[in-house]
Amino acid sequence: MTCMEMIIYIAIVITLILLSVTLHEAMHAYTSHWLGDDTAFHSGRLTLNPLAHIDPFMSVLLPVFLALVGAPIFGGAKPVPYNPYRLKYGDWGQALVAVAGPLTNLVLAIVAGIWLRFVDFPTVLDTVIRLFVQINLGFFIFNMLPFPPLDGSRLLYAVVPNSGKEILRGLERQGIIVIFAIVLLFNSFLITLITSLLLPLFRIITGTGL
Image (cartoon, rainbow, N blue to C red; front, side, top):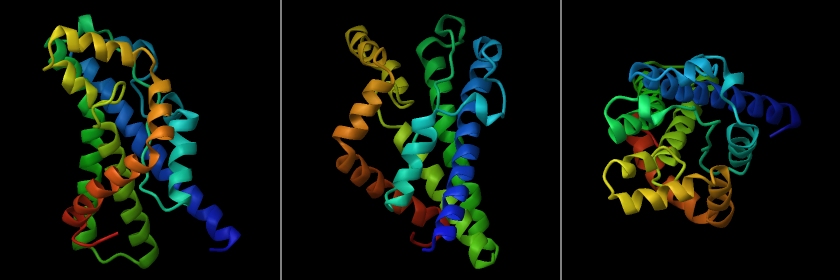
């Protein structure tokens, strides 16, 4: 890959990541608003402006690095603030807000994958759409892992006893530090896990391998 090709590739990756992350976070915000909490609205997060949502490390540096080394692309963004006491349905309301983001990525991957199945695109566009599917599947799988503060942990809050909730809250208070630790200490395991889930999902959705 030439220097110019590398620059174009990175630009495409960043563009697809920003689109995916923005829709992911916006759906968190819209879901919390729909469930009765206007915190995201007053925090300026009820928007499709990517600048309101991106985190320099989780939204750009980490995914781009993974793309450059040929690993599955995953990442995150700034958490959308919400007031759990204003949401409908208690812990299940929080779970709905949490899974709205990853499920948006899954829907984006499915729609793009179906499009690939039935439309004969030029090679370059086909490659971009396949990358879009891969990115959104990576975001879906990573964010559904049940580690606080990732979105998947919110499903645990809805089903574990109060003692378990306290443990989860303790981990969640560390926020991004926990994510850094997971990514840095368990990167090989994490990449292997995401790859093992991403490959069959990609094949099911697109009808082809990566």
